[in-house]
Length: 63
Image 1 (tube, rainbow, N blue to C red):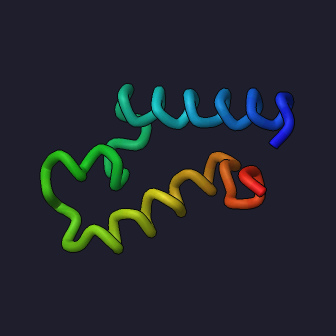
Image 2: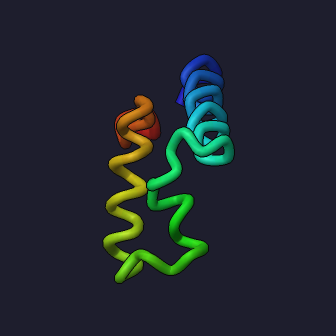
């Protein structure tokens, strides 16, 4: 991963974290994990992956 793509991914992740903390993503898996509303760990990770993809953080960024 190049330095530029790393910085871009970091900005996107910080934006996502900010949205979770400020309630923009109030119903997200990340915000509900602490409340144990997620039935299984596998489902939780799948949903987190979808949420990250929604802000542009994809598996391809890590390749």
